Length: 305
Image (cartoon, rainbow, N blue to C red; front, side, top):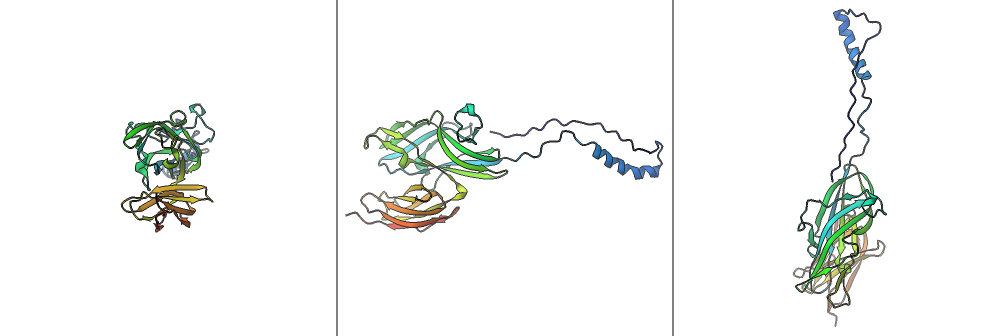
């Protein structure tokens, strides 16, 4: 999408100036005195009747990225999404193309491979940029994520996934944000696979995806980092803020015990570490500051005897 401004064709005026009361036969000295006055009067009298409209606000830039809160489902090796469109609209109730006002963020020049993402690769603070576009300045209310197809790989077998409205009208995300003239806005779509992927009945290979996606402004978000010991115990960490009604998770790196919980709104969180066969441990009132890392939130888990 390219925004352009094409002003109307300016009207040309032919200007004639006859100073009142001046004889047509001017001496050299008279001409030297009158010439500056003639030029000033000509400039004033020759104003354009159709000036270019310079009052329009400049556009701003929106960047949209995708990350994943990891899945705790055993055996899940990959979860691929093929995204066909990422769109925004100023109206929360806008639905189809007939409503108008849509702006595309995902470039339409991408190949299928370039717009197919394995969400499990974007955990623990990693992300991928979906698109970056100029938008008219103003307030926007809605994001649409259109998913062409999706599948999950479990124990080496690939299973197709169905997403309600995912491939037709798209997933509707209501999240207000502002685009400022000549400004830059960065939004993160945090796709929580752990709360989105289901096996029905539990233990079967009948997988369904009901996406749970948090939309977070990067400038308003911070991160929590730390370690969980002992290593290599399939641990995960969850941050919960009752006041913000916000929940985010992260898997722990097996070899190092390190974790990163990203895209957290500024505020206070209770952080819980958990692992199969171990007792849960919670640290309360962990503060998160926008644009900063809260470090050293470390755990040592005890075996559940």
